[in-house]
Length: 121
Image (cartoon, rainbow, N blue to C red; front, side):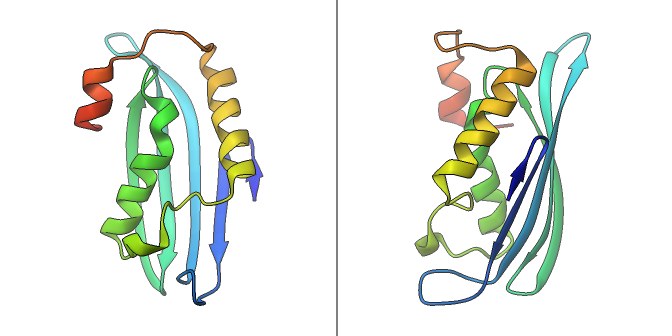
């Protein structure tokens, strides 16, 4: 379930998914040196095992949030065969648009592709 600044991912175990209860909170922050960036807090449980992690993404990389969230979920037990952690396209689109609006970015804005290929540091 999506609401601006928060995505709640919940799934019961079954043939095509694991037990997942994850909250992904985000907010735009500003730093004198780094400029605008998005701070994420991801917490919850996968198969009943709790976890919490925080990460930041620069303004031009924030669109790639689902990849980083999936990598973190996999680190905490999400099996890769179940695909990305943000599986419902409608929720992904809503979060993507909310982040873009909060950052004031537009299609065609420059992106550091070297950073995208390297992943978040």
